Amino acid sequence: MQLTDFVNTIGLDFKKRYGEKIHKLTLHGDFSCPNRDGTIGKGGCTFCNVAAFADETQAQQSIKMQLQLRRAEVQHKAKKFIAYFQAYTSTYAEIELLASLYEQAVADSSIVGLCVGTRPDCVSDAVLNLLSSYLMRGYEVWLELGLQSAHDKTLKHINRGHDFASYEKVCKKARQRGIKVCTHLIIGLPNEGCAENVDSLQRVIEIGVDGLKLHPLHIVRGATMAKVWQRGRINTLSLEQYSQIAVQLIQKTPLDVVYHRISATAKISELLAPLWCEKRWPVQNRMCQLMQQSGGQGSQ
Image (cartoon, rainbow, N blue to C red; front, side, top):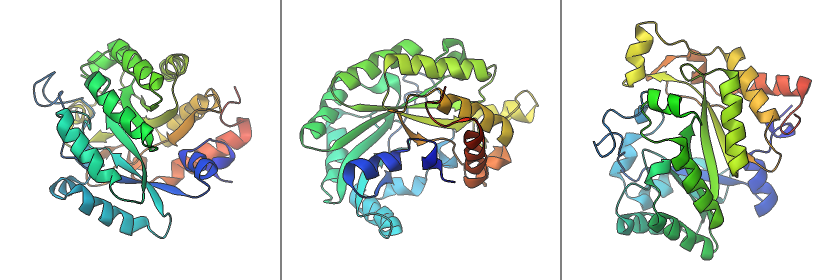
């Protein structure tokens, strides 16, 4: 029983289109975030601490060096790769700097595409035009948008600094240019339950989306939300609760939408709750069991 028996995963999608395995190589462009530096706000999103999943020491290395190191870790698994700018807001810089960083990545002959993680309010027309230029050169291009929730009340509560309308606007613009959009949704945010999660998914699908990432709410050290959790004012989901909700979302997702992730982990040194988020396989195995019983992607 494998995840690909039930879900259209990005790995499966790559294999079908390229005829071989394609891996993402995570890069750090030493970007900041407008929700941290005062441009939009300070302190960042209440759930966020990049150190919980990213290697901050990467930012001290050149893009070329990062690619070499990351490739060495997985070269026995794949020969072609997607350069994945993940940490912070990877479109939050002058367009000349962005072009330089992206160009350094695609200069490596093993790179077949770019994946750029960012916020909906940090994607200008100039950025979209830059990303489109790589499409015209034959590269695969993914724009990862951190939406988290389609509910403005929730977005305000977690201090996202943008609304759903800003997501809708940039998503449509990107897809009109042929850029693929992967949207992040968090399950377990304060004051949201399964109904709100389903509604977020349906609104994202109605607008149009190419890929999805589902995440359980993590409580990590250094995040604003950690203080609230320590006071007992936030409850996190159990592995079973998360699995039940995530499976419902997957079942309601059209088969042509690609899942880049169905859960997420955090470094145990940074993770406060839920502790099951330290490991990937238990939750994935449970979700597969549930989908074997009630159906996989697109079954509802």
